[in-house]
Amino acid sequence: MAEPGRATTFPGERRTVTATTTHPAKPVLGRRRRWTVLAVCCLSMFLVGLDTTIVNVGLPAIGRGLDVGTRGLEWTVDAYTIVLAALLISSGALADRFGRRRVFQSGLAVFGVASLVCAWAPSVGALVAARVVQGVGASMLSPVALAIVVNAMPDPRERAQAIGVWASVFGLSMAVGPVTGGALVAALGWRALFWINAPVIVAALVLSAVFVPESRAPRARRPDLPGQALLTVVIGAWVGILIEGPRIGWTAPAALAAYAIAAAATVGFVRVETRRHEPLMDPRLFRSPAFSGAVVGAVAVFVALNATMLLNTLYLQHSRGFTPLAAGTATLPMAVGASVCAPWSGRLVGRLGPRRPLLLAGGFVTAGGLCLTRLDQHTSLFLLLAVYLLIGIGFGFANAPITNTAVGGLPPAQAGVAGAITSTARQFGAALGIALAGGLLAGTGPTQLAHASRPGWLMVAACGLLLVPVALWSRPRRSPKA
Image (cartoon, rainbow, N blue to C red):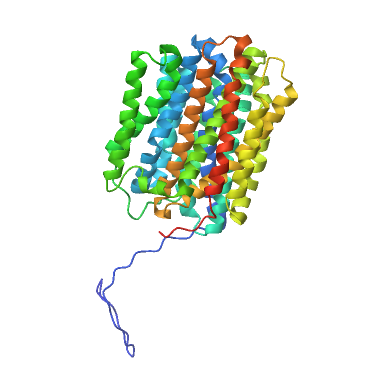
């Protein structure tokens, strides 16, 4: 019997023994397993996107139930998106280091527990605090799900198709949020907006344990605690100024101090990240016009989407007297446009590159915003539905090229970080959209809402126009070297 660790040579055989160290190759998943992994990740992403917009249609009901005004309602939405935006990059890096499935499942658990606390919240303060924790859990889902998908799809063409599906599901979830929220509020009350998460969380936990393989980056980056702290201050300070500015006054001493803090944190973040060997957000990435354009485009698209959601909710329910269900149902054309055009956009990106779908996205969003710049209390419902369809189509065309361009800017080993940067831009745009639209309508009565929202629709159109230079900066995605 051969001794352990010693080669055995049989008679008549010449063998040269060389001491080598081998690493097992990463197993390639079968096609069915790969697309099952995609489906599980899409389920969790549907939940994250849904929670970004499902609350919007329930805001008037939450305001009545907890006796809170527009400013408190803005914090109910933005407490989630600010924390989500601030922690996405760190969560992606942690997943690359400690295991993507492990972080993904931890995020699901935190998100689920926080959702239950939201459903039981006795006051707006408790609800906002629970939304903060919910944002922490969501930050472990968005970039990690994309990293799992990229890791499971080694073929660039199949990966492009998978990213298109992933982006379309995420976009669809945000578009159908108001419809789902309206139905839940009408049937069960606003607390059902959070109860609905529980069965989805349980299903995602079970499916991820069965089908999703564990994966890590070959060399994970070190944590960047100073960068993380400064990024949190930057996002929270700028969005907080936009929310609280109408109440405290734009030139009040408190506002001036907030400007100083936000500016100092922004400058400090850039300086710290420039000097670190392994920064949270590598400034060198933004030297590429294509990558920078993808980030700017992500912000613009989500400013437009979330401003549309808030302006629509308050206008229809307060000015036009719609029920939550009717207001949510009115956005069905947006969901249809997003669900039809998002997968189409993914196929276009795979065949032609990102430029054409981005130009289409910019054109549709701009047209939708311009149609409502003369909004009043008697604007035709047909025009409103047409606008929601236009913006939904634009949103559907935008997500796949933006995601694909951003992910293509980093090696696959840092897919978690690449996805996190794009997701951070999206959520920052979502927070900005809510803050800007809410600031326009703060303190406005039902009869003045339509007129007060007109600058908001101009802002939506401007976001669409911004996608045109983003499209011109883009180029067909090249597979980066790992």
